[in-house]
Each structure stands twice: as C-alpha cells, then as structure tokens.
Image 1: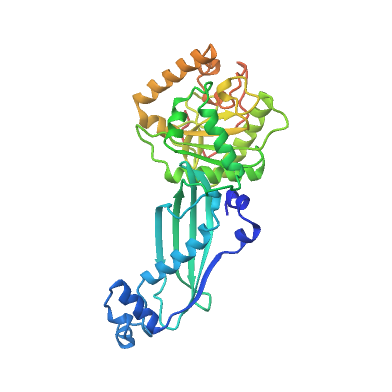
Image 2: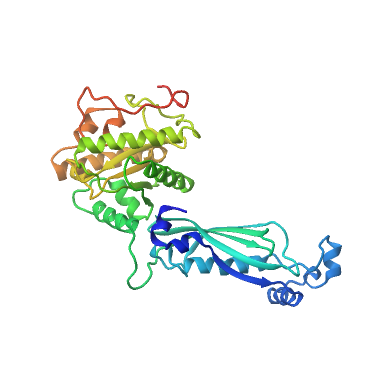
Length: 380
C-alpha cells in the first residue's frame, strides 16, 4: 500500500480488508436478482438449463458480482482515504475479471482493499481492488476501480503530510516571486501529482519517488496544451545550504537511476552524459527536466518551504512546439522583472544537469551522476 494510505489510515485499516458477506447464493436469491434486472435467461432459474450449458447448477447473472463489489468498495471509501468524500467520486476506470460464474450454493465474501492512494488532479486519487471469494477461498471475481474525489470530508479532518505539502506548493506557485507559468497552468488545471517521499537520499524515498513517477507516467498524455508535473516532496534537511541540497539531490537521482535501469533503458531521444547539451534525466525510458526546490535556495523562485524535486516531461515540452519557446521567453522576462535578472545558470550553461539544483555552478563543476554502462539510449 502506498505511503499516503499508511499515513492516513490506522494499522488495522491498512492490514485488514473491508469485508462484505458471507452471502449464501440460494436459487430464490438468484432468481429474484435476475427478475430485478429484467434478465429472462433460463440458466438463472433452471438447473436443467444451466446444466445444458455445462454448469452444475443454476448460475447468477454476472452483475450480481458487480453489486457485491460495489458494496465492498463503499466500505473502503467510507474510511475517507486522504481525507476526501468519495460518495460522489468520479470513476476514472472500472474493470471486472470473472473467473467463473457465481453458482447456486456458493457462499461468497467480498474483500476490498485500498491498493493506491495519492494526491493528484486537485483531489484524492485512489485504487480499490475487490476479490469475491467462494467459501473455500478461491476467487470468483476480481474487480479494480480507480476513483477521484475533489471533495474534502466536511468538518475537521486529519490533514496528512501530502495535503500540507500540496497546500504549501499551491501557495508557493501562486506567490508573487514565482515565475514558471507552466506550473501555474498545471495548478489551475489540477494536473500536478504530488507524493511526499520521506528523507531525500534515503532508500525508502528513492522507492517512493520511482513509484510516484511510474504512476504519473501511466496517465501522462503529452500535447500542445498539456501542463502536467510530478512533484516529490521530502522531509527537512539538517543542512539547508545550496551545496548540501545539490549533493543530496544527485545522490538521490543516482540511486533512482541505479534501480530504474535494471528494468528500463535510458530514453532513446536524450543523452545519458550529464555534460552533454542533449542530457535529460530518464525514468522508465521517459526523459525529464528536473527542478530542485528547497528552503536555502538563493533564487526566490526555487526557495520552497521543504526540499522538493519537480519532474517535467521533455516529451511534453516537445509536443508544445512553438508554444514552449514562447512560454520560456515569458518566464525569463517575468524572472527579470521580478528578480532583477534571469537565472544566470540558464543563460550561461547549455547542459541542463547544471540547472537541476538551482545553484549557480562553477565553470569547472563536474556532475557526480553516472549512467549505468550498457543502459543508455542516445550517445550524443
């Protein structure tokens, strides 16, 4: 289960699924349900008709499993994952896998569990899996649902770390000193996905960052008017200097790459050498431009209340075409107007690796990142 669920649900909630049942499937119950949905199929009422189709006894309409699954889902969302009310949630996806028909004589139990929970698209995005089991424990039907709610639970509610981080980020992006217009567009469109990952540089935080990025990539659709970012936030660092943040950030990114490269090649469109002007950080074979934020940043537009890494898709930039270059000029003009100058790193160096931490690096600076041999795509 994701870190958000672990933070916002009790230990009992995270370990034990929500249960509905047992429900005994009698012939009368099956026939009544078939009548209620207006399905006249004889196999739902006659053992002889069911046996003619190869079943040992009367079977139930597949939608009976749907009803059971819905009841189990309701038991999970009643716990208000992430502090949201899901009674009017949007079902982004729903899938049922019927392993065998429900039969007369079955004693069924539906077990629902929260498999993912994260802050995204301006609300709480959750995935719920329901397994309907027979009395012997074998699965009859498995359903998965992805739901989005943008309605916080009315009244006092526990506000988790991610909710606080998202609120702080929204305030930061909306502030006078913030210059990135793309981030403002993403915030307005609720297309910023955020995950609080723990201690920057730790193994657990690396795993959480990778998991969040892969979730983000599943729904990313680069386009001319697409503004979407993944933001990983972290616990406070003991040393808030720019150099300390930069060192820890690169250690974090190196560990991310070492793990990711076991399963995914480097992006074929970008170079793995951080000194190259064609470098872009790659996760899941997808190229990203990274913006580091932290409390000790010298530039106001990088000075955030907690350490954070913002992952922006290069494919999204490319899909924007001329719009990207127009927006970049407007951002730099805004930076100059608000802060007296354009970020000198952006106009001095072509390699984007120098820009990730936000610190103005010396000319002889060497990036500590090394791509794993044999895993790279472009060699430019």
